[in-house]
Amino acid sequence: MSVHVSVEPEILDPDSLKSKLDIDGCGSVVSFVGITRGEEGESEVKRLEFDHWEEKLPTVLEKIALDALDEFGISSVVVAHRIGTVLPKEPIVCIHVSSPHRSEGFRACSRIIDELKIQAPLWKKEVRSDGEFWKSGLG
Image (tube, rainbow, N blue to C red; front, side, top):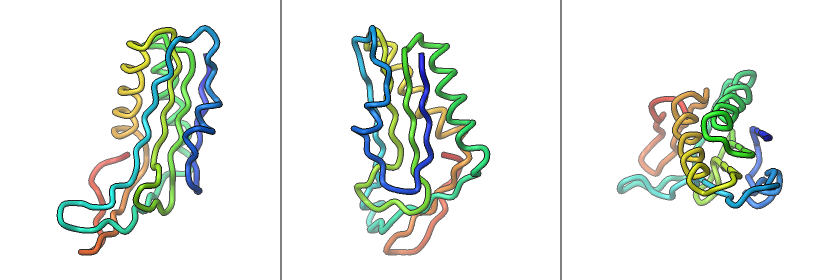
């Protein structure tokens, strides 16, 4: 069982991150890649700006991944999150899960993104054609 967590100031490469998975004995790789939308309602999204708690974010991401390993019996997790400026169509977050079977992989991947949105000390400002807006909550 393995966990790889990263906080990235530059664009994420989901395929490269997937190569960090341990897939020995696995029959499934489940992935989630969240990207910046180019619009919010009637407004154009120009960019997202992520602020974070530098000392705490990697620890929180690692704990979320380790909890998923324990709860779902999966084999490996990779979690990467962008910080700084993220443009439309660019990846914000990437999660890859390897597991013996698809069912636990899908459940684990879903739980990881849900917990990240609740727990991760990240704050997001949306810069749009109609102004700048801090999005509520963590993650």
